[in-house]
Length: 499
Ligand SMILES: Cc1cc2nc3c(=O)[nH]c(=O)nc-3n(C[C@H](O)[C@H](O)[C@H](O)COP(=O)(O)OP(=O)(O)OC[C@H]3O[C@@H](n4cnc5c(N)ncnc54)[C@H](O)[C@@H]3O)c2cc1C
Image (cartoon, rainbow, N blue to C red; front, side, top):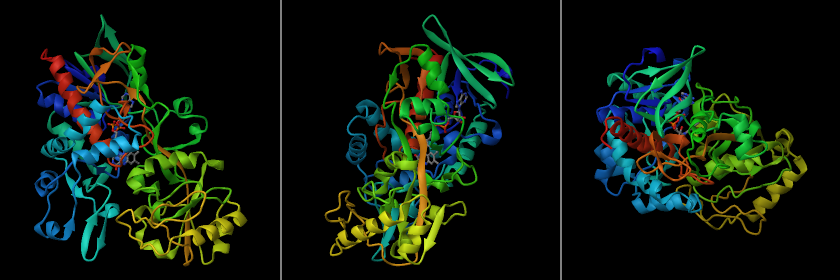
């Protein structure tokens, strides 16, 4: 559909990723007539949602809770220890990783609605699978999950995205591609539509409600530098090139309240030679998330962070920033043969910056940009500090750390002494930004006077107040789905005069 063909839309939704699709499906369920505007061409549709691995996080206390989301065989139930993940666990994880800054109302809304929303998504044809890879290990014949996360959207980003577009089509909800929302129509204190550009022409698309679900500002180099800090214009972007902060900006332009951690973002260790934006073929393969079993060294040949401070679920999203702060904005992850079997799949792709060597001296000469002498000293000091008497276990925080180093490694410390050695070069890859708009738990955007703005709703990455400094893995999609569904429902009620 083209914007000129839109007739009688009750709800205009900006974006066509996970949050937007959930908003549209919920608005339709609530009896309204939604339409989506998507700046990308159809060939690049899906936003960041297309690029995800698909991990997701939700509360489960019993097998019945798990079975609401996952179809499990009796065999799986017998042989797999899924553990439990309580409401308190999820709230604690959100509090702990955000340094207790996450907004309590939004966080409770996320935690309490996560599982019911995924169950609702199942009714729209979205499927889920146990996340064996990367979240479980076989120990004494039994598969054990760790890190509070057991579930993936089936087929990752490409399948999730395809499933959402199928659901939209089935519900008869149109998507206008190549249609970039530019500003909000704001009259007499109410939002009543969007001005959007298509094929060089501007269209005023009027509607009773607007849902902004068009991502953060991570793809905008100027905004990254302005808000995240100097040097971030040089960072890689892990996903879509289309999330330029336009939705946030158009709401601020009419008086919306900025909220959350504007100088914060989700950022990971990402292949040093990755493309500037996400590559739809490689997906999330540029990430290098087995760093907990490595030591990481910078250009000075020195360690700079506790690689084993926690499960990677709770550190990976902040360690991209730590790499960004190193000289030259890069680091090498170093592994020896003992942990080769623990490396995640992304270490075995073709598009990888990797070197191998049979001696540490040979490896030192191959680490591009690293002081070789200092590197060898670092490995020697690290090897001498490993607490070899503490048993190693990848499925618990094993406490096998180091003694006496200025920067300790707290868990999963193994000596680096068994060839062949392998090393991977990473830089900072920004996933999405944390600063955004302030919303009520009903997803109504608030103005600078803390009052709801009639007709304006928001969901997804562009909502501020949930994530600060860090992020528990698997929270992005589910927060987009939870707040997208609520935003669509609220927008429909507003459009139909019900609330
Ligand atoms: C590589 C990678 C891996 C990830 N893995 C996971 C994971 O495993 N689990 C997890 O929970 N999260 C993961 N995430 C985070 C997750 O992708 C996001 O949290 C989520 O997809 C955001 O959904 P959204 O709908 O808010 O944004 P998006 O899916 O990005 O959708 C926003 C849409 O808005 C469109 N748009 C932007 N500006 C305009 C405009 N002006 N007019 C019209 N349209 C516009 C964009 O083109 C885009 O389609 C990952 C992200 C990346 C990049």
